[in-house]
Image (cartoon, rainbow, N blue to C red):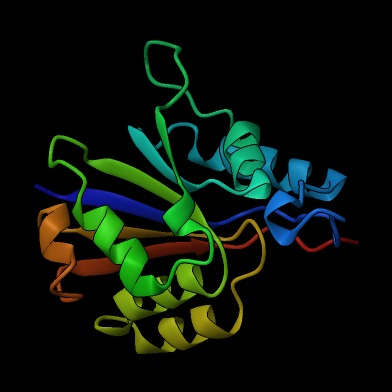
Length: 172
């Protein structure tokens, strides 16, 4: 069974929050980016979202406005471990997902999200992998087709195929 994995970097955040980086919220442009990405992802059948627990990633999830066919919001699991989590840690969390989930979105931060996207793309599209590693701006997301279980993704990149990378429109 083919599964689909979406890896997304949070939308554009405010430059500073006096309390901490963790508390930085989306800028007005970030809300626009999240809504734009939500329109792209709306009909993709996403069943579950793994999301860093930072303010900007939570707001990115909110701005996406993803719904299940029933009209309920797509379930989300907020994970503190995804805040500044490495590619290996993100891969580990994906590997813990049950196989009844076939469409998964992970919202996190750089460098973890773009590094994992580049690692997964490397086996089949090394040029794209290099581009991802060099340029994966806020609100960018990648789509991978996975021909194995989520737990097998922990051990191998070979079953992941890059289907698409979407980057937000540049500000004019």
